[in-house]
Length: 106
Image (tube, rainbow, N blue to C red; front, side, top):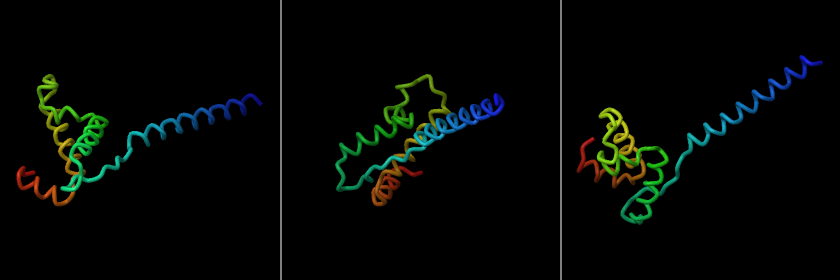
């Protein structure tokens, strides 16, 4: 009887651990829904939402410039900057992406 109880207890612990891991993973892989910026969108509201998304992703410093975190390696800075640019581009309308890409080559 004690082996059966121990086995059931181990299975219960396993399910709890897996359940917690799945909840954490789901939160980490959250998708953010933001209206794409175009000429009709309020830039001020879009900017606040983008700052929140970039902060959640841990890449907001890329917007404020390197002097915010001078200790960062060049490789980490480039990685963070690339992620920030990509995230911002994904939150722009097609027409706006085309306009921006004319001014800043990829």
